[in-house]
Length: 426
Image (tube, rainbow, N blue to C red; front, side, top):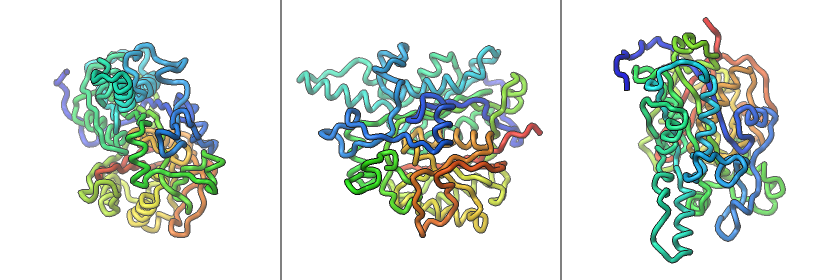
């Protein structure tokens, strides 16, 4: 790694120059955005992926057409069958497309690729195979496929990027932490470009059923509106929210400095003006309002903004009773009187909760909202008298957005917040 670069000045500007995503609404970012903007839900009942004899729930957000066994399977990953690797590499290639044909130092490109659970699907498959054979040996690719840092390794290998590599695992905040770490690598002079984000696919009985047993997942029973319409199972900030719905996804962003973007003639999608991370030090799973509040305030301070400057907040919004109530209370305290005028949305109503990948996809959505002046809706919403903020229900909203914040919180008390600015070449 080249080490002859000095750290950036505090005034150096970090910008987004590429994005890519794979979700239950589409296998690229444009298709995903169109689904979100139209208010379409991507959740469905699938008894093949979630058979009743193995799983306590049968609704999820599943990616179609990408990954092992599909027509779109990546032959380069044929021996590495973990879905998160296939999704993450595809999203990374999409985010990196703007760099095609440009000359840059590949030793100065960092890859920060996160996940909460990594290749647990392959570990589960290999365990089942071993038990059925009555033997102890597992496949030779089990360990390489299981490792979370294998995602960054595959991205580096196939895109020929040789700078620093990191694999943060911060539960449901993993993707946001990857973006923060990427920005810090740029600020520290350790890279000229960073490809950062997260991927997740954890539909295995041990994880799904454990979430269900701890009452975190939505368990849909006859009489619930989602029993006949499974796309309504996730309903953030809604009066009848009853837990999150698991999904799989990947989201990746390409970051660089404004100077580098201009040197290479890259289109700037948005500017990352502020960020913050902190820890609750409170509970293994429950969110802690005061520390989340501190995180959001730190992000505002880092961006040099007062609360009323934020026009839009892309919420963690999990559709659990505790999170949505806690997050709403945090927003009231951080934004004060401005909270009532803050346009808030949660895309988990449409996409479900993709765990480690969720915050990366939410950050990309925030960037796109700034570019288009359009906030995607919080779907499946029924007003809750206790949660009285503006959650942009049901339909997209066009509005002038200059600054937006995206935040995420994970088990173990790990929080992050990102502040983006609409790109104006000034």
